[in-house]
Image (tube, one colour):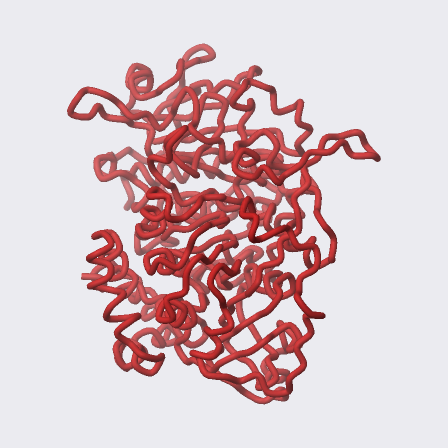
Length: 279
Length: 328
């Protein structure tokens, strides 16, 4: 009998809740938490979601297990058909893709993400790059952002290097406002920007100004911890809720889909011991 | 794209770009000789699947220099070229090892040192640029990208006001790579290619590039290609090809073999250890120390080949290829 779950399993369930039924949803590569969240959503509350796998572009695949790379044939098992790369991106450009999931080594208060480079004038750290995230952040109707690196412990000099930053060094994926503060609506993109941000500390939505706003926390986290670990003003709208834990069926489903625990690569070692009672 | 050596090309080819020689089979070394210093290359496959690794190793043995890499989702292929000193500019949208190993060490070092000029791009931007080349048009529009930092890296992007709707759009110029380098499961002597599984950008690369060189797991008759399910890339796009079994190793080429995760772990550790360690522990034993593909196959060994083919025995066997302890 399953009595408790890990942070990764909790985050997967939280991301899954942002996925609506009957829409076309796409995950990029290198994001096992999101891949699992899409499979959980499809097998629970969103059976009519069109699940498009990143890298293989398979339609509604049913992989027997998650591989440590997203372009493996195992990830395409059971797909009823597959899209080519043009078709996938055309669907988004035409405003037909309902949801996509994006992350970054920096995420700013407007939901801009940086997966390209650290360092403003001089390149300090080259990141892998965003794949199609730049295009999709503009075109996809709704975005769920996620990060497993919200907690930013102080270094030996007492300085924190925030994942949630005031300003990104480079904007790979567009949030609600550009770096110079222009509202994305002025640009006439198809997509409406980030709707949710799921982190290892809590869940944010975005206020009418487009600023991240703390909605809920994991049971073991306080608002004060979120403030300490966030590089911008933590706004709230009234009392902050506690995130609902996944039920045991959801946890069992995740464990069946990911027997190799590939998703734990995304969870920081310090957070792998966090346990939560299941609903 | 900021390089004056590679002006924006509307049409894809030097000549008419139609390759009709009835027999295009050649040796790996002659295939690799079709790529010149400074060429813009588009590498087929993606991430850890069906990347033309044997050809890339042959390019490094030739000490090729100054390549400009364009493409979408890449890993060990572009990282190896960077580690071998072959790349001068990257317009890739992603080069990394996903969650499995993370950041690509050689690529990262080469970008940070300035050895590789970083002109990152994004998937749909590239799709539209390649499509413009396929269509023989000077540019294509996109609605996206505006508002991000990418235009700062790409002064060649222009914005226009749409003459029909009055909306602002971004124009991206045609992009015709000099050479598309592909690996397919099957081909015939004439150069017809059959790709199984996700083709990623391979078709678009083949159609947009000025020449296409390919390795295949096995060369069969045209009739057999049709029996296998049909031709993915018709022969007239293809300049030359070579039969190179395990030519994508250590990336996967199903149904023949899976991703070689332990070899990738070995590669990653060598690359992470810095240029000297990479040279000693990887480039020397697996690239420069193997005079040809047969020597490489002998180096990785028959047991590896059997192990990577075992994925088809069932889910348990497939999954066991990816267990962490295998890498120890």
